[in-house]
Image 1 (spheres, rainbow, N blue to C red):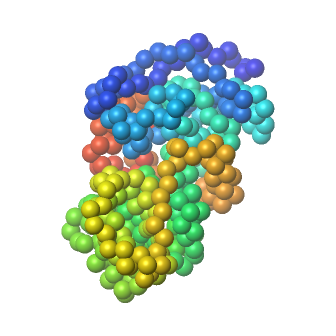
Image 2 (cartoon, helix red, strand yellow):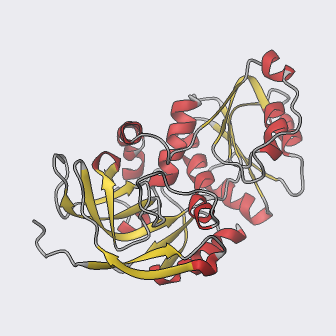
Image 3 (spheres, rainbow, N blue to C red):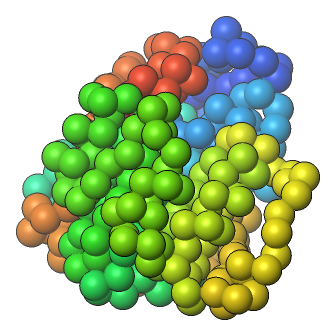
Length: 337
């Protein structure tokens, strides 16, 4: 039992209906209880991510059986253990990937998706780790098999995903090229370690990639733009190149694509979503992170970049900021707990 009894109710965020940030509401709700293999986390902070915005707009509902409360990542203290949970103790500080429910004072997480708070990070900073680090590690390192010495292109380098991808790829020994939408954002990416940053509003990124690689192309691309970039992504890949698509902010249907380069260059086009994967798959990603990435976090060699924090009650402002794309790094909600 926890040293202090759990409260009966908590604050949480819900969406009154599909729509803009104005549909966000704060409400009182019962504190959830962990099931077998789960832990209950008293949430210090939760990450705000693009899928949360899509869910609010009515385009990305949580999986069947999951709470409709938004939020895919949290950090805080474990206050209750479900049946069969080992390796964690009450009071331990962790960050966790959750399928939903993060925008609340208490959240249930699968124990296999929890990782200890990296020592250099505060609990609030640690909330900016799970969603982006799980995503980048599983797609770039595991699925695309980025190797030391290869060249990596990530679009949206100033985003939470982008800032994480730049750091992890550099730590892995890759050369990193990124795209961003302003001189300020390009400078931000270069400060994180990018070898080159392309302002896509001023230059054709495919032409710049060709120039920067002396016509060879890049080995791996991480893309969240979608259909609008697919032809240029294919053109930017080197022989045996791998394209991983994780979102489609600018369309999911391609009107025309010449298949010849895919065959001639022996390209791999793949994609992945994190939320829909089985808990066992996410637990396997967590173990990979613990082995390969947590030492980098513990040593301060990589870290989440936090742009802004908002009190839970100001989730509407956090979502409005996310929609402007003006942020550099992560946006967080803090509960005050």
